[in-house]
Length: 168
Image (cartoon, rainbow, N blue to C red; front, side, top):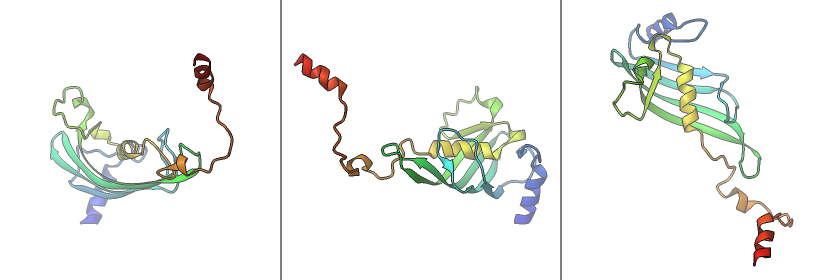
């Protein structure tokens, strides 16, 4: 039955755009994904690949449920000492998928909703959005990176201290 679902998935995938038509086919759609590159900006560089195990279920005509686990390792710089470090992501996601035409009139107040054209649904776009939301805002090599750095003996240039000294 997994082979049959995979063949239905391939039938519904566009060869050029790697998109899936969610308006057709059998549900749930279960698949393992591997992406070797990402178009994400302002995060680290992808070390190996993005992998995931996902399931897309049909709830109603214009409503789907996405569940899955995504894993990836990025190389980024510590924001304190600028040392290259690995940032590992391993997170679960559970959200609603709705057609993008419903975005403005949707008043369901659901926090976890992804809007996209259901006839040309791009799974990679959804995964990249989830990675962007899960990527840490502050990247540090250690919890107390600055306190653990050895004192180099150099005195820091404190321009406002000089002004404060003049006023006092």
